[in-house]
Image (cartoon, rainbow, N blue to C red; front, side, top):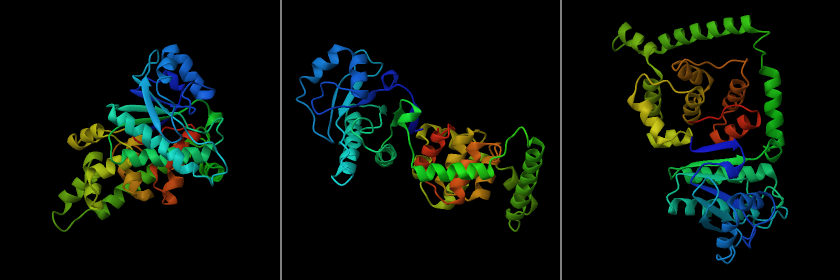
Length: 329
């Protein structure tokens, strides 16, 4: 999964590089900056003294010393002044500069804090949006796994309206599995029978008749996915990157007709291909999965698909906010 939101202590991330939300002096401070300096030991401060500081929006790199990573990339985020003083571009520049340094030093995995969202006062939901947009833009052209590390729930916030809308949708559609198990089983049976009938009716009968129709019904996830990609006219790389899936996993799916992906991966491809709800259900059913009202994950996915919102990173922000598995692999 190229972009992953995790709840963790960034000083414990075993990656090639972690990013430090630093002050211009690079000599340590409060928050993430202080935590990283304490965990790395005094050697980090000694090297930072040789760098001559760093300007807002730029980045510099040092060794990691006692940290479980190879490098620390120091970047200086903007102080929030109401949003009309170029803060967004400065913050985006922090991510771009840091990623460029990581790429230059051969890093394959990088972990970011939510830059400027602490004592610098940048609104957390807006800071997250800038981070996701800038990182995903980089990942569209580069192979790297990037983590956004959230220390605790208080440090994470999606937009209040989006959260409220999803919460209301869950309240309206979520069914407790224990109290409605019989009804849910009946519903899934009806959905499965309906899917088989629809697939049979849609299967091409003219060319090869019954044999081809049956082959369509029996097509596995891999075969169906590749046909959908061909139908979309998109390149493989465009689809798997949009699905937040790395090239290695996509190769496994392409080369193994019997490969069974995880449910978040199967759904991610449906999102990348912008399938409607029925098409999504058909695709993931070929990997053995279904969408139903007894799963908050499923209800959130339905929320976005019914609104034709196929921004996988925005969906993952919402899934993370509700403690659900993220899309991709």
